[in-house]
Image (cartoon, rainbow, N blue to C red):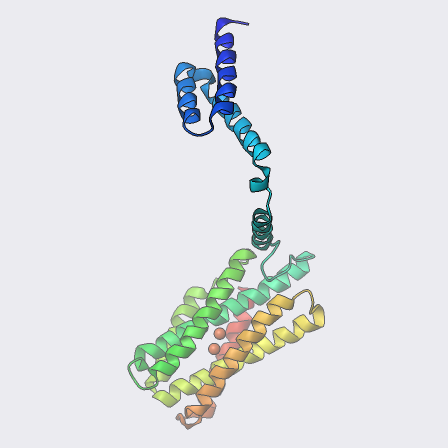
Length: 271
Ligand SMILES: [Fe+2]
Ligand SMILES: [Fe+2]
């Protein structure tokens, strides 16, 4: 053994003695001294010393280390860890390519629908935001923002590509919302009734499909879609309560918008 190793060995023996002597003031000073005197081996000594000190503390003060409070705390941490390490969000991993394609198409069109609804309410607010109908439109828009945020999250978690038509729905949605609002409050509400009816029917068809497929497997996704469907139905009813049917050319307007919604759904599933 060379002189360097002998020095390290003697320093380590000294550290052990020091640890037995005092765990408070002396240990940090001694470690610093060891690291200054033996820069190459100082880190190893420090690591070894820290481990030994932890073992010593645990063995001498075990009632403080293992007690009911600490056990409860560790169990709580484990629960949080399990919660944050879920295998998937609300969509189960697909069993095959066919299921993957079907689920992705479903999520893509839902996301596109919520995106379009947001743009429609943005257009309506641009025209009627300062009118007495403004707060009602804002309230529905706020719910649409939550729907869109949820689908943004689901798409990201499941690596689903959004529709390539989003830039188009951005403009088309805003123009539809603003144009309907230019017909007055009734026009905006007629647009709301037409769009929300289409989205509700679309969600209902998805709920039927998932229920027929495997309701237990898609339980969480079903809960989200049902909740959003109920919100859309509320928007639809609010539109009717606020004189949607009094809009000029209500029947024609509603059917034209719903035809557009069907085309949008068809295109967003595929593109
Ligand atoms: Fe929505
Ligand atoms: Fe809605």
